[in-house]
Length: 195
Image 1 (cartoon, rainbow, N blue to C red):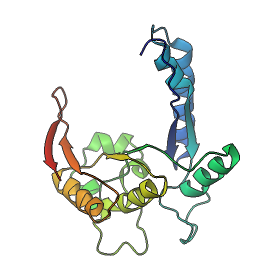
Image 2: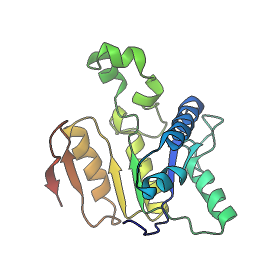
Image 3: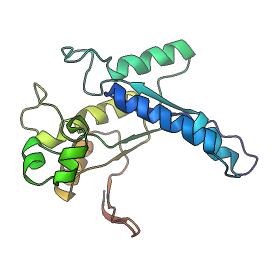
Image 4: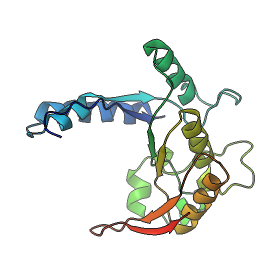
C-alpha cells in the first residue's frame, strides 16, 4: 500500500447536530495528533466528512424534523460535484433498541449517559407490522439500493433482530449474499449464516 494512491471518501451522517460537531472536533484532533508512518491513514482522515441529515425522511414523507433528508443531501452533493450518486459501502449503527426493551433491558449506565435519540428509533407512521427496533433498516436498505451500494454492514441488537433484517434484505434482488456475523469482544467474528 505504501506509495499507492487511493481515492477514499468517507461520509458520516447523524441527525444530531451535537453528534456531528463532536465527530468533527474528534477528526481535527486526530489529524493534528497523527504521528503514524502510514500516509493512507492520514489521507483517510482528511477525506472524511460529517453531515447532519435525517435518514428516515424521504421525498414522499412528511417533514417530522427541520433536518434535511439524507437522500436530498446526497443528491445535491452529487449534482454539485458532477459525480454519480454512488457509494460502494453503507455502514450503519442505527438506533435499534425498541422502546420497551430500552426500559426493560438496557443497563442504567446506558440509559443515563447515552442520548436516547441514538438508541431508540422514533415511531414512524406507516411502519405497522414492523418491530419497533427495526424502523431504520428498511429505509437504510432502500438508500443502499438508491446509491448502488455493493455492500451494507449493519449493527443489530441480537440474533433475532439480525434474522429480521436479513429477511428484509432477502426480499430485494440487490444482494448477492447475506451474512450474519456474531461479534464477541476479544474474539474473531463468527459467521452464523450465509445465503
